[in-house]
Length: 343
Image (cartoon, rainbow, N blue to C red):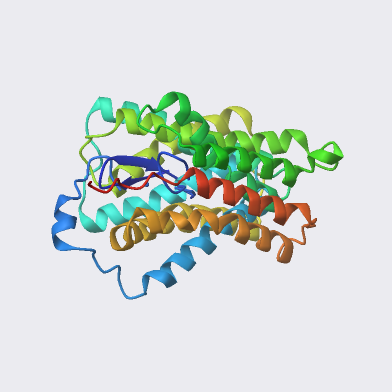
């Protein structure tokens, strides 16, 4: 999960995606819940660095899309809690290194750390663990597609949880279309044969955690001092402690550290949860949250491609068709009514 600045309000997100907040922290993803964009609006968009923003957008899509493959490889040698632990640990180390270089402090105040503890549980500890458990029995491509349902869950939750996000007919239609896509991916007309129900349920529950966490962040951390990197770094530190405790209680210590699973977990954290968030912040600053959040729609495509080409996962016709329907529905749920023209 990370934090993203919107010109109107702050939205919490993770790699890598909901009707209220945007983007995953992996996720998904989200800038700081406190950063003011007034200065940015007067100085214009900031250049993002040596690489064109389109190149960085493509890199971010690939990194987050490959996250599900890395989880799959990691679970070949490590317990799900251990994969999630490595993910947040190396992600936290990456962001703490950035803070050290920039000489930025971590968030302060018991209230802030209390809210970050809940945010860490909802946006990192729970979904990262659930995805790892899910991929013990389902393909990484299916996990990536389940992740794309986060905007649909966010839309459904906004009907009751966020009074400022009143649904339009188009967004409600997107919600229905998206869940129709889920049924298509799972082959509902065949009685869901060949689909591991438990693993799929874990992946869908993981995607539900993100919008729940984002709603919590919007209601509790708006106005909290701190940069995006400081808040997200602090959150990942808390998640590291949570997962260290869970791993000690429910998993046996690994007897060996095989090369590829170990490298996968390190890359998952340092790249997918550390570097990717930094790249996301730059994109949001340079091209705005609306364009930056479009990375969400490339993640399941890349996750599916990686699973088929690298891991040799089987792909049936209903998987890409259903994924396309899910993404179309998710896109509709993100639409906002246009501004009314003065009479």
